[in-house]
Image 1 (cartoon, one colour):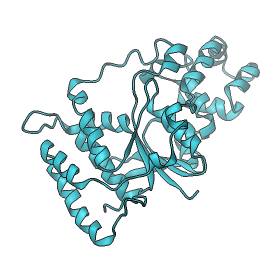
Image 2: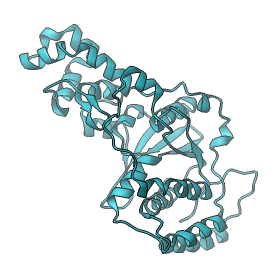
Image 3: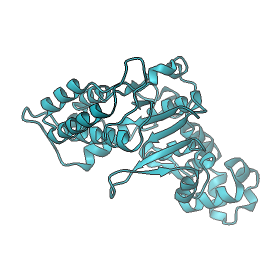
Image 4: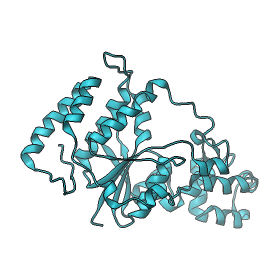
Length: 309
């Protein structure tokens, strides 16, 4: 495990910042709250979890695979607000200026691209910056999640033990657990009457949905037993919707160096911050740029190891 990756589930942080912060605008009226929040995430990641390799991963269009399985997948989600939509180009611009590669592919969700990268670099140490519970299925010895911590302003690490502590099932059981519970945000209905506690109890007892269905008479509560029996097709569909895809051409054909972190473009960062009037971000970058220049020089032919703080 000589390579270290950080993968950012970009829209998870973009939406979180947009709705968590009050409206912010520069003097020209350009909204900036999501840009500000995302820039803070980039600074925190470089401070606490520097890595030679990484990418900011974005959804691009609807998931063709999942829409084929279930046309109503994510159908209840409202469109992106205009105030947020106008910030996305700036988010991407500032992310690239920080030295991150952008990864997206038409018809694929960010979660799938992240899963594909984890599969491609299976022996690397990978940290995924996201609070999306679907990504917990990827956690194993060398893969962990970085969950934003509102109180401390940093991240909590979700490793295998932490996944079990949070969901009461193991990472490899997350798909079956979520298939039972469902996900209202993705318009995936679960089994009627089965909440998180019941689902976890069933998975711990039977280990999988297949075993539950094979030993249905051993399910103690009649109401739950009947609900599961009537949900066989739904459960099969849910598992396909929740299971992440790893066969993605844009990842499979990518060279390792395409995920190599680059030295930040400090003049570009300053220009973006000046245009958007992100003065506190600019001050933080200036302060740490001067410190960094005293510490090391980065050759264009060597990987960039973040050391902003």
